Image 1 (tube, rainbow, N blue to C red):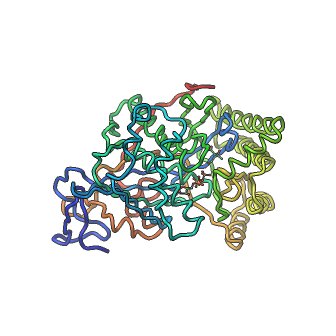
Image 2: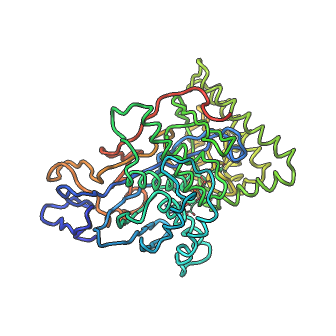
Length: 487
Ligand SMILES: Nc1ncnc2c1ncn2[C@@H]1O[C@H](COP(=O)(O)OP(=O)(O)OP(=O)(O)O)[C@@H](O)[C@H]1O
Ligand SMILES: C[C@@](O)(CCO)CC(=O)[O-]
């Protein structure tokens, strides 16, 4: 670990003059542009994936696995923007003055932070290409795709929201989410990037404790709109459900019929605490590919595909009605039975749409064999993760047996809680720490880069789950029970 660090103003601060907390550096007195962090969660889609791309409603909830972005501003003489994304082995630096600012700010092309952007501008995409072609030339084609997707998502947002006068910065990203597993890793990084850039151009109010919910909602909508643009760069044809639940937090019912209008988003504050088992097949795939598969089926067999998508929407709306009914009781075994049966039906329809995978079917088989609950794939499918709603009366020894089998067959099990906070901000990147000189410590970039695995990241900067640290702030929205977008 380095003994010196770069602080918010770019000067080197030697932290060794006072006793050093492991992994953390002493807080500098008053930096002008302090380092700060944003964080956003992953998600599970409980009902409605794929159908949501075709204008149907979907229900999704956040999980406690999250991405974290540390933004460090460099001194004035540094005219570079660097991305450090160690999870995918990606580092890249651009010279700010060489980027295609004139194309992005040309009349008719320039977008304002409050604009609604629903598709990528082909001229802007083209202008970025020379700056993406130098990205990771040394790695395999497959890896380069992953690197370029992340780089283009950042660059499009940076050039749309920033300007040539932007200060040099380093964006360091770590995530506790598996990538390409259906848990919304791309959306969570798009939300982190969108929130960070909007904060840097000073267009966000809060978050703060006594912020009126209406004002908080406006900030979240702004972050979410640009996160969707980030997703457009990675996915091709995203519905926007992943970035929406990642921005708003908790759980949402989401629907986007008309892509030229904002989607309809209903926060589900009474989303039940479902006893879910989340299992990763470790079979990576790309969301864009799976979405394209359903698109192709719809083209070749429109009538049948439409019926299946409509049936999926019926599943989602039935679950939504149940959750919102006045006599809803999440502890009633009949409720679990109904929600579980709806999951099974939803999975069957996804199988018919061609987006399951033998490894996903194997998870379902093992759960069904033990009579332990109801299983469906979650996210894009084609591999990735499955969720199982466990029966309230599932015998503990049978559950243990299932876990053993899953481990033996190289599946990955996750412990996660549903319905946590959405996008969060740690400004400045300082955490309260008992025993530190003035009760707080600044997050050190080196330590953040080197934090070991998911536990190390959570222990250092955690904004959710078990290791939640004081200092993180979240925008809070009010409860709503009606659609306010297109229906
Ligand atoms: N930790 C990370 N660091 C850098 N880039 C990341 C990270 N996580 C995700 N990405 C970017 O997101 C892409 C993965 O997006 P993809 O939509 O295929 O998977 P997902 O978001 O995990 O799954 P789903 O959309 O089904 O929920 C990667 O190719 C990469 O560009
Ligand atoms: C498969 C999909 O419905 C969910 C991916 O998490 C794609 C999308 O909504 O963008």
